Length: 166
Image (tube, rainbow, N blue to C red):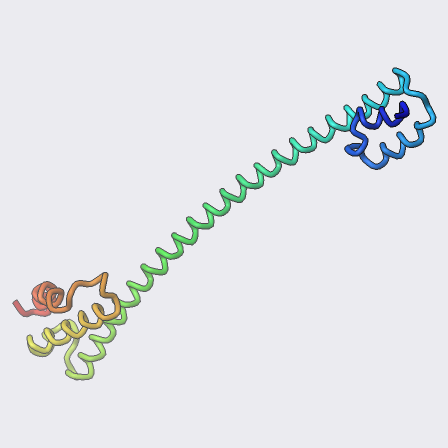
């Protein structure tokens, strides 16, 4: 084993960057004295320190990116939940408006000449309208509205009193 080969094996020739391996190959003419060995070893040590520092920076950057991504995902989830709440509220309002419009349209078609603020139709007609509305609401949103007869019976009394019936 020549001194140069021993130097390669001592400092881990394969782990050096390509330009360092080329430099070592050019130094193969020299004998292994203490100066040569220390020069090669210090070059290797500096390379390792630079690589470790770079790896630490890369790891820190990855951690920052992961934390930022998690924050962005959480913020986006909050925005999506808020948008879903707004959509649900708009759908409820739309359903209520549609039911009111349907009731008003049916009333105008069935009893022409009567204003909505006055006494409208008979008590049974109002009960029929309410039953139809709650049946439709129960059919479209069964979890939100109770069974139609129970809901109609509960609402019927307050609705009839506002129309002038006691």
